[in-house]
Amino acid sequence: MSRLDFEKPILELEHKISDLKKIDSKKQVNIAPEIKKLEDKLAKMRTQIYENLTAWQRIQIARHPDRPYTFDYIRLIAEDFVEVHGDRLFADDYAMIAGFATIDKQKVFVIGHQKGRDIKENVMRNFGCAHPEGYRKAMRLMKLAEKFNLPIVIFIDTPGAYPGVGAEERGQAQAIATNLMEMAEVATPIVAFVIGEGGSGGALGIGVADRVLILQHAYYSVISPEGCASILWRSSVRAPDAAKALRIMGENLLEFGIVDEIVEEPLGGAHRNPEVMAAAVKKAAIKHIKKLVTLSKEDLLAARYERFRKIGKFQEG
Image 1 (cartoon, rainbow, N blue to C red):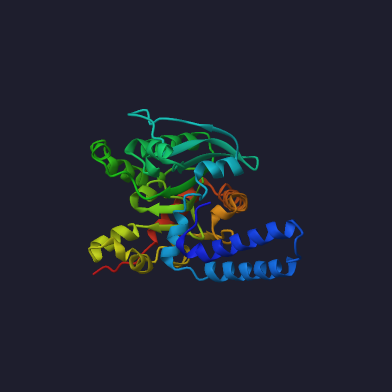
Image 2: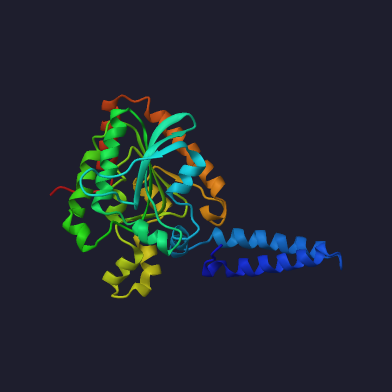
């Protein structure tokens, strides 16, 4: 498992405990009491480090290469997943996945960004940065979910929409803008989870939901910390300062009314125990779906509209 810089003291102590356990297993000398002391020290160290993380350190966790991605959550919480492909206009986009599934006997439609685990897969998935055909595919399938009266579960995890020339030529901005407008009128419950990176319009393009939940160490922002630092200070080295100033973590977003709930992660991040993380996501998804399906379509859409209208403040002069 990959380790981040601030986790090095934890890794060193884990290695020391592992070496002592090997010696103890050979019964050359009784060092069980010493191992117990080190394990207690490790537990305290983990708690102290992970409960006092900076915004930049939490963003590093959100980007951790071992962090669960959309397919991992589908595998852990859903049954009978059947992927659906293509936007019926240009091509399929492997950075955006969608399909039918069952979660705890509730039939749903699942949509989400998908990153890769290695270079080859990341190239195929375009590092989770969707093209316009990805957003058009998502919208096409949301309308299909509406037709079959299926709730939609969305997993947001992208640095941002792909900004390449080809994507712009095929209408990237229009595809995202169309999604923002049409998602507001999709007459079926939508529950969205920000599971890692929630970057700019690439995230918001599938983020107009009745409930938006964010994992404890995920972030949701109009711009990446590096991009913000490059604009304000002409240097991406100031990204940690930008991360703090942007206030893009769950507790800030909850205060601003941008997200509705923070889903707690296992100590150390979702990648430390994907099964426990997936169970928490499943529980939250089912809880909100059960509440939303009781609303009439008119009330559902009215509440969704009001939810986004009240974000931010403005003054008429």
